[in-house]
Every structure is written in C-alpha cells, then in structure tokens.
Length: 362
Length: 241
Ligand SMILES: Cc1ncc(C[n+]2csc(CCOP(=O)(O)OP(=O)(O)O)c2C)c(N)n1
Ligand code: SF4
Image 1 (cartoon, each protein chain N blue to C red):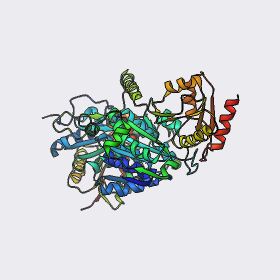
Image 2 (image 1 turned 90 degrees about the horizontal axis):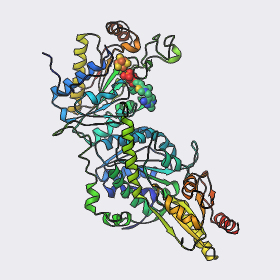
Image 3 (image 1 turned 135 degrees about the vertical axis):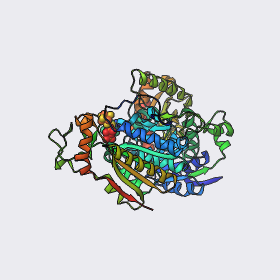
Image 4 (image 1 turned 180 degrees about the vertical axis):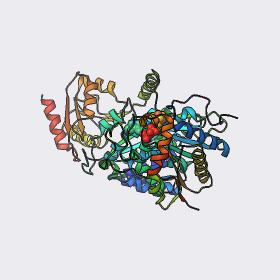
C-alpha cells in the first residue's frame, strides 16, 4: 500500500506491523508525531499506549514491559534520550529487549528543534554507564523508518538487548512516498533469509520473562552482581553477545569501483551526499557514496578497504562524531576529510562539491 | 511452631541485627502464602538495603533502577492485570529520587501495591540524610543534626492520601509485636485491594535502622516509639470504599 507519510508516522506503522505490545512516550519536538499517532493507532489495535510523566518514566515503563516479555518501544528527541541513559544501561545489564528511537534535534542543552546528528556519540558510545552496546540502526528515508522499526524488534529479541534507531528531525518530519509492505516483503528487504513464522517465533519470551512462577521455579531479573568475580563473568558473556551482534552489520555503497573520492554519511546527510555525487559525476569527477545503515556494528573493514585507494570525505550534521569512527577504521591508510555542520543546519551540495575539488587537486 | 513461609527462600539474609527489613520480608511472604498468590506475584525490589529481595522471596522478582519501581509496576500491571504487582521501597527510593514516579502512579490510581519502608535515612549508602530524617537527627551528612535548611520530613501518607484516585494509605510501625501484627494487617489489605481491583494502595512502615542510628536494636525500637512515631503519626490515612 503506497502512501504519502511523514517519517515519524511510518515508524509507527512499522512498529504496529511488527506486533508491538506497548508504547511509552513523553512529548518533545521533533518526535511528537510518533507519540500522537501512537495514541491513535495503539488504541485502534487494542494495545497499550501510555503518555508518561517524564522520559525517566518512559524508559522505566519500557523496562517494566520488557521484563514481562512484551514488545515495547519508547521514543524521544535528544534531551529526553539523555534522561533515559540510566534506564538504557539497566535494560542492557538485565538483558532485556526493547526499541528506543531518537529523532535527533540540535544541541547541546535545549539546542533547537531542527534535525541534527549530534547524538551519535551518545547512541554509539553511550547507552548509559558501564560497558554498554546496542545495535544502532540508521534510517535514511521514510521507507526505512517503516522497515527498520520492524527489523529493530526482531534484533532486540534475538539478542535480548535494546535496539536503538538513530534518526533526525528531518527524516522524522519529511513527507515522502512509502510503501507499507507486508511483513513478508519487509523481511525480504531487511534480512537475508527470514520467514514470517521465524520472525514471529522470536518474540516468545516464555523461557526468561517474569510472568509469575506458575508451573516453574521462581525467577529474578537483575543487573547487580556483588560477589567477587561475578560481574567480570557476566560482562564477559555480554561481550560475547556484542561480538555476535557484529553479524548485523549493514551498509550501502554506490559508484565506488572507479571513485577517487568517496562521500561517507548516514541518515539525512547521506541523501545530500547522493545529490552531490550525481552532480559531481555529471561534471566528470569520479565520486562514490557510502551510506551506513548500522552505526554499531560499524563497517570498519570495508571502509579501510575503500580508503586504501580512495580519499574519504565524511559529511555529518555535527562537529565530527561519526568522523572519529571513520578515522579509526581507515587507520591512517589515507586522509579523511570532513564537512560538518552543527546546530540544526543542513550540509550544502555546493560546499560538498567544493571540498571534493580541493581534495582532488591536492 | 516455627515454619518458614513457602514464599521465603530458606537462606540467611544479609541485614544488620535489629533491622526492620527482615521482618517486613517475612510478613510479605506470609501474606503471599495466605492469599495463595505466589504464582501470580511480580515483585519489584528497590535500590537500597532491600535490593537483594530476590534472594529471599521465592516468587518472580526484579530489580528496578533507583526510585523507578512505581513506573515499572505501572507498565507490568497495565499489561498483565491478572498478576499481583508489588513494589518494596525505602524512603530515598520512594520519595527522594523517585518522588515523581510515586506521585504520578498514585495520581493515576494505578492498581498496584507499594510497601514503603521508612527508616529515616539512607541505609545502603551509609546512613545519610533522607527526606524523612527527623529534625535534629544526626546522619553522616548532617553531623550537627538536620536543620531547617535541610527541609522538613516529607509525610508520605499525608501527601499521597490527598490524591483523589488513591484507595488506601496507612502508616504502621515495627517497634512492638502488636505493631508488627498491625503492619501485617495493613500490608494484607493493601494486596487484597489490588486483587479486588480497588486501585492504588500504599503502606508506610516505620522501621529500625540500628546501624545508621548507632543504637542497639532494642533502643532503636524505643526510638521509633518515642521519637519517630511522634513525627510520623500512625494510622489509616485513607480507605476509599
Ligand atoms: C541513580 C542512583 N543514585 C544513587 C544511588 C546510590 N544509592 C543506593 S541506595 C541509596 C539510598 C537508599 O536509601 P533508602 O531508599 O532509604 O533505602 P534503605 O537502604 O534505607 O533501605 C542510594 C542513594 C544509586 N544506586 N543510583
Ligand atoms: S543499614 Fe539499616 S536498613 Fe540497611 S540493613 Fe543495616 S539496619 Fe537495615
């Protein structure tokens, strides 16, 4: 079914298609469409919609839903996600699944309500205190807001870990054509080989959730490990899990083979890169595009390979956050140039083209 | 004859001698047995001395972030109304860091039960001042005694009972056998209310913390009788029909 929708609405439709049980949210721009539309759609579906008293409550209610094995989601924008950090760490420590969405706005502080990519560090390096990692999905279109919501729930339950969707105010609020595909078709797009049956089976939480101890021994779920060596052991297991998550690595590349300069970005910046790439090619410049679809796992090996024979230009709506991971990946085999714009403004195609020309003439 | 409730694991607890937590744990387990709800129980342990509740209660139990049990309980009860959802919280957990979650769960009249153990201090972190510390009481952060600059004790029962949708609020104490039995009656009613779909119930229990108070267990009970229960008046504050 083809529709014209805002990204935030498409995300809601994706979550509902996935089979979400509960949504918790506190108003903040530019993600209010999620909370408002959820209030309508979840009630229609007979599921739990909850407007919370704060993002602290949002993340901890999400925790409550997760602990009993329900498919739960919360969403917010930058300042609200900051408030959630402790709760995210508890979810990871307790090995509980959920989906968390950040429709990024400008920061620091109250910043502004324009789209931004200033929370990359928080999402990818953070997720709260302690040794935390979350799979981080990076939608770049309204279509991907729909499909990645469906993907996120599956990955959350597969690893019993929160999955983070890092998007921004522009993708969240722009109107675009979206095909609200069947579950089967989305699974074809987002997974190598996953049947609808296997997708649905993943949400069976009966082996670990707290549901009352009828017919079994009582259970407890915790993140506190006080005995000597206990937490080290627990964290070793978490590390093994994080390593397994590496297999969910995903990216997209175009016109790389003969490229001399490769533009690297995620989300809305990658759309601008694409325009720049087309214009550059028209004027005879050999430029390619690399778009990250996951920030953790990070496509380090592929980026290093590309960089061996090509110059890299990172375009990001921040002062240079993903840039640091790209530099780590490239590991000095080539120069990495940067075009960053912070504070809610968009990168400009002209500036990208200018940078490319400079890089080629060096 | 001494028998262990089925809902209490046969292990030693880690509480200091004379601490009230062990008593309330046992009362909780006895009530769960008596009401036959062990297999429906989902309990939420706080961050505080009772964090290890799950080592002692033999029913499904989880550990929430400091102060957030009422939010966690809200989600669980809304999604599984047939379960019995109880939070067990200290004064720091319930009314300092978690004041907002408690207030809003009460205001929504969530059909949950809160056992609130008031020992007038932060036991777990070494006996610092709590919102419930008695004026003049010495703690590790009020060496000269709590002054007016530190605020006055927050009266949880008085505050929460003023909220329209709240069903049952009572304050009891552990300083004598009669008071312990009264505590058990109040706790049982607070759970029965939930089973009967009556809504939000909270029992505040005045409890001894001999370690932070630097008292012998017996003196700690006397301190509740002579001082703490004068500041925090015992009784039923609300019992909405
Ligand atoms: C976010 C956060 N802040 C502070 C702490 C440290 N902390 C642990 S328990 C506690 C206070 C516990 O006091 P109370 O709730 O009164 O329970 P008691 O130990 O007295 O039973 C504090 C401040 C924490 N674990 N998490
Ligand atoms: S510190 Fe106080 S509250 Fe904690 S176990 Fe000891 S006596 Fe009990």
